[in-house]
Length: 224
Image 1 (tube, rainbow, N blue to C red):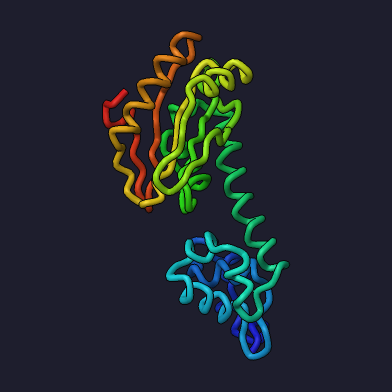
Image 2 (image 1 turned 90 degrees about the vertical axis):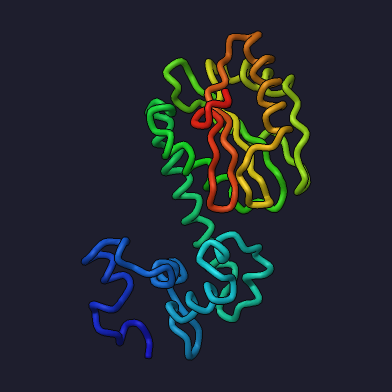
């Protein structure tokens, strides 16, 4: 039976409009973006099958396209819709940072960085460049490495800070291992960057480490 033959109160789109997106299950939310199923399978069935195959919703969203395309009924159109939805979420968070003091909305900042960096198979070192009011000027992924680490060059960060006319920065990187505990190397590079940026009057406000469902803030830990 297709979704349009379900009781109206059970259809994902109608439920969302009547009761809000928060009342939908992961499968129902995903089904809204998938829009259609395949012969003998509704969009909700397809969404449930995808989530089951990848362990959880995030597993579907982080999966490589070639892996997703193995699922019957999932092609380039559905992949494009899903990626567009993710990018909308990231840009929504980024827009909030552009118009407010980043340090006044640390939770939003951390969610944004997590949306950008979580789930990467390799380590990525990124920088939020901020103005005098600590509003976002630019997010830039500056260095990429293997699963064991990334080579971070303070000179390049200083050059980028001057290019963006930044007054302050927030450093961030992910740990592909999933553990967000800062390593000794993380502490060393933070100190090197702080010293280098101090020479051009750019403050390091925080260094955020993104793990698997975990986020560690140097500033909150008193490590800065």
